[in-house]
Image (cartoon, rainbow, N blue to C red; front, side, top):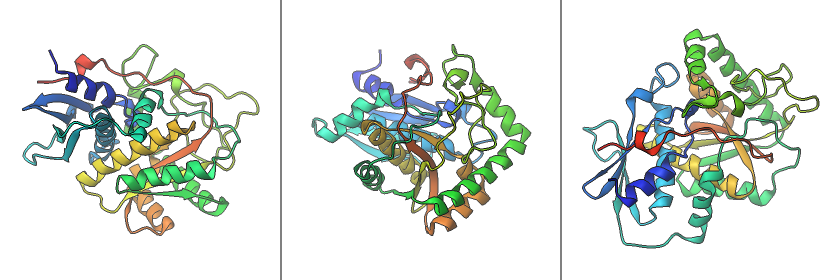
Length: 311
């Protein structure tokens, strides 16, 4: 039988986001530590040729496991001879969660992508500061795009990247393979996808569903967009970016907000470099987010624990 720490870490870890909800992680107990591994069978052959998306997802799962085991000491990529071993959580001196950690821990089951239009209410300055500080706490940076000039520039980069991906028939076929009916344990169910994209949309939307939106339910004309990045772009940096992303997403959830991920400009190398230059950053963008207020939608499914626990 798996130990309590393994169950706690895995139960929290599997609630992390992943590209197309592939859930590319495995958990095991080894010599008293909890280890999180990449599941090579779930790596996207077309969309994730470099392993970036897998490492972002496992970094996010690692952050959830950290909240579940607040006494643990985390080591990223502890054994370079095992490239699938991404993180090890070793027991440290016992301590309770801080108030801030408890709030984020309680947000784990409530956090999921909101792909529908947001309400017009603006995100408060306090919430914006909290989101920026959440990224900074994980040694990452987060830029909020304020004003139509930077927003329009980002939108053009994102739409251009989306067009590149839409023209790639192998990419589209792979994404369609992860779009499922509502009874699948992984992938993106049609019911949680946003409404079908329309020409007037400022930002690109994944076509997980073909249902039309209701009249007057266009996407917000001036969304709050954030770009998360790190100074480096090595595998360890991407794992750290995943932890920062999850801290940001849980902070957003705790603030009563919602978010959806915009990965197209990160997935296309030329667009990613263009975004970096547009931001005036020397570091590397790792993910973009759209943030706002909205009705909680259905959560994407998760595989049962028995499928992600290994010996």
